[in-house]
Image (tube, rainbow, N blue to C red; front, side):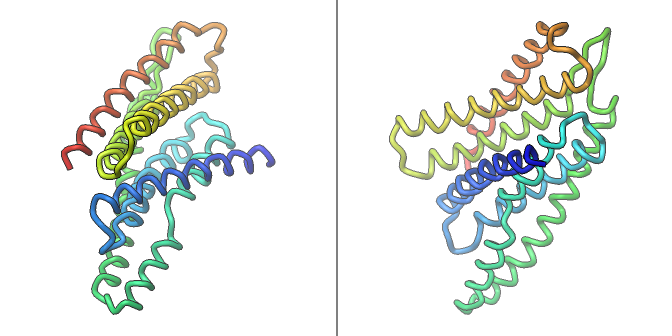
Length: 236
């Protein structure tokens, strides 16, 4: 129980920071005339929640309870924010912006429901072939989880671009944001692929070379996705 609480706390801290960065970048990009930042984090979080609930829980992918709690409860629970959505809606009503308030309610509810549904559908599609894992001659490659990693990297690249390009930052701080963010994501996403393989009964001492290959492959895919997200963000 204590391990789950710690996992949720760590995931919650990461999710809160991500929510701040994403919402701030979106507001700098689109302005504060409408709750764009809160809408963006809620829709993105709903999609990713649906995707990972399908993969990690409904499809019973091998992953410890602590990691599931850290991701689903901690990370995405703190990344999304119903309370901020409610507060911003009330502020719009108090300002007499009844049309914007109604639009925020309608768009938020509809978009989040659609995003969750698309996420669940995407998770099911990823897991269609062999439970999301390619197996051959004693080795395995969790392509479903690797695809989710690449998608996460794409979103991080997009957000980083919005933050770096839309907010005045020194070159040193820009480099720090990009290198630390990219390095942390590539490292941890590769780590949980290896943990997945270990929990899938592939002992580390007997599969060191293969696991290093999986880690490096994930780093390459995530690097390309990060670059793509950053490039897309610069074009927005």
